[in-house]
Image (cartoon, rainbow, N blue to C red; front, side, top):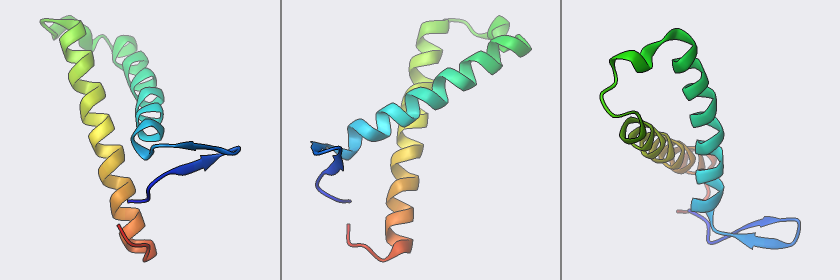
Length: 75
């Protein structure tokens, strides 16, 4: 994992970047779940949405870590 990511001269923590990526994935997935009607079987929609976002965030972070290892850059 790198220390910071430089975005137009502003240093940003990687977790923030991963959270933004996970947010966009979450919005797209939520729209798809609403469209197919999957929320009808969900007991607490806000809790489900939070869990979905956390899982996506962890997945993006794990994928980023795996890609940095494959690229040969140090953690």
